[in-house]
Image (cartoon, rainbow, N blue to C red):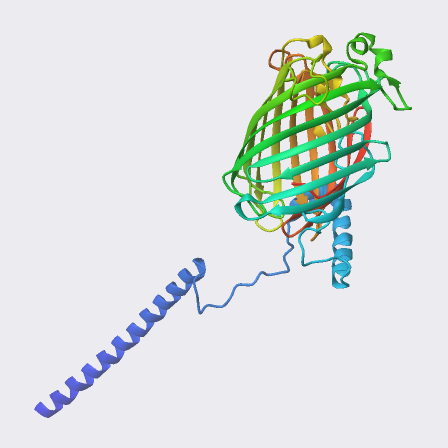
Amino acid sequence: MRLMAFILALALQASMARAGESNGATAATASRADSDAYAVGSLAPSTGVPWNPPETMSPRRGWETTLNMPGRLITYPLTALGALTNAGLVKLEDSGRIPTSSPIPSTFGPSLGLSFRQPGLGGRAGVGAAAEYRREVLSGPYSTVLGARYAGTLRKYNGTLISATGKPLSLRYGYDWRPEELFYGLGHDSPEGLRTNYAVQSEYAGATAAWESRRRAIRGPRTRFSTWAQTQTDVMSHGRGSSSVSYEDEFPAIGDATLGRRVEHLIYGAGVSLDNRSGIPHWTQGSRLLLLAERHDAPIPWLALKDGTGHGAQYTRYQIEAETGFSWRRRDPRTLRFLGRISDETQGNGGDRRLVSELSTLGGSVGLAGFEPGRFHDLDAVLGKVSYLFPLARRLEMDVHSEWGAVYRNAWTDAQFTTLSNSFGATLRLRYETGPVAAIGIDASREGVRVKYALGGLE
């Protein structure tokens, strides 16, 4: 009996053990299922069956496509242009016809020896060329380069410059002839119909001393302080332009005070530039601040280039210019930029003998690019600019911009938003990895459309 009871007890104990193992396995399975469900929900690794959508999904929903359609239609020409240009540039690079090893062609960068460049005379100078010869005479911390440059254009503008550029002191002598400068009268409301022209001859000799906190290879933080002094002589004469009358015919009072009179000045001033912009292929972030003060004073006889009598006006010019920008997307960034500038001139002795070429001006490359160079003249000038830069292709980017500005007798009291003139335009820029090297574009205003181009010096 005792043996039978012992056997029954062992059988019952084994049965209970098997039941416990079965219950434990069920609990473990449930626990793993809960863990897998949690893993799927948290995007962690899981042994569960992967989820697949019941049908093929479109990148956008129907209502999203409808909302994006107007924008796609508007930008389709730019998209097509970018695709065609990208394919063409890749083919030219693969064939070796476009260099890929140098970010900027040496023709347009600083170089020693003989080189040929754009004329760099600004304004209405027109198409031309410049020949420049540079030779280093000192190296090391006192590096000094001697240079000689002559520029001329088809409109008979010309400029000569002889210089010795060193650290921190630079010397220069120059002569400029500008035969067809435009003048429409004084003020932002000067009528387009009063289009006249004048000629001005300038000769100058001077020196500049400059210090920089850091010399940058491409871009980077930099603080620059400079001071300068030069003696200068100017003569305004009858305009040589065939498409408009000379200025003294429409503005006899100004002509009587300035025509054919030699004006000499001792010009001296100082400026500071704070620049922390950075980024490639164009600067993408940071800001820049420029402060200038320049005095046009009576000449010192023993320093004057001519007779030193000083028949001109004496005045002081102040300029404040600030620029900033920000970008999004790390590769091929889209950049939004803002620029503001105020130029203020204070009158001294001889204000009635002020030369037209000495006034603040807007139009062309100095601001309001959709207007003719020299379209607006007065003592003070105000300018604001907004630009949006975005890539079109691997080597191309677009700069869409708008400018607002005007000239005033006194910008601090007379400036009003309703009196500002507007110019807008678009520029196609060819770029390498480290920056843009060439550009062509158009700018428009209420008075017409102008085409512009540039090689080098875009940033």
